[in-house]
Image (cartoon, rainbow, N blue to C red):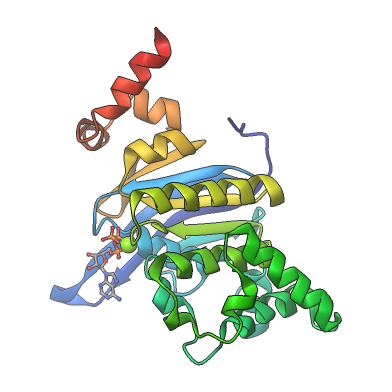
Length: 271
Ligand SMILES: Nc1ncnc2c1ncn2[C@@H]1O[C@H](COP(=O)(O)OP(=O)(O)OP(=O)(O)O)[C@@H](O)[C@H]1O
Ligand SMILES: [Mg+2]
C-alpha cells in the first residue's frame, strides 16, 4: 500500500469538461479534485457515461479542459505548444478501450515500435541494438517480433493488439500509464494475463498506473487508491480498503452490491 508522503505525480483542482452549449450542454466531468502519487495504482471506477474517458483525455492533454487545473509533479501543467505536449507525452502514455484507434493504420508494426525507441532518445542506436530492444519488448508480452515485423496492426487479433500496446509501454517507459479498460475486448484468461503484464511492468519501471474500469471488484484487488465516479463527479475516494470495505456513498454501496464476491473473498481472508 502506498502512502501520501510519496511525491505528487499528477493532481487536479476543479477539473471540468463541458461539451456543447445551451440545451445540448453536457457536463461530462464536473469539478473533480484528485491527487495521484508516484508509483501508486489508482483505479477510477464508475458506470458507463460517468465521465471516465473524458477525464482520461484531459489528463493526457488530448482534449481541452473547460475549467480547473491539472498539475504535473506539483507544477501547473503547460502543454500550450506542440513541443511542450511532446515532452509531456514522454511522461504519460495510454492504453485505450479500442486498440484499433491507437495506431496509425499505415505504419507497420516494426515502425510502431521503432517510433517508441526514437521517442526515448534511441534514434542513433545501431539497428542491431534496436532489434534487440524490440525483440525483448515483444517477448515481454509473449509476442514473437520476427513474426510481426512485416505486418500491419490491423492484421493482429484484438488480444495481440493489446499486447502490442503493452510492448510499446515497455519501450517508452513513461512515468504514468493510463489504462482505459484495456481488458474489455478479450476473454477472461487473456484479461488476467494482460493485467499481470501491466503489474509486472509497474514493478519493473516503477510507473504510476491510472486504471479505468467498471469493475469495482477488480479495482479492489489491484489498487492502492480508488476514486468512484458518478455523473462526472468523484463521490468518494481513498485507499481501496477504505472505499470498498467501508463505503460511505450510496452509489459505491450499489456498485459493490453488484459484486457479492468482494465480501465472500474478504470473509475468507479474515477467518
Ligand atoms: N465528444 C463529445 N461530445 C459530446 N458529448 C460527449 C463527448 N464525449 C463524451 N461525451 C459525453 O460525456 C459523458 C461522459 O462520457 P465518457 O465517454 O467520458 O464516459 P465513460 O465513463 O468513459 O463511459 P464508458 O464506461 O461507457 O466508457 C457522456 O454523457 C457522453 O455522452
Ligand atoms: Mg469510457
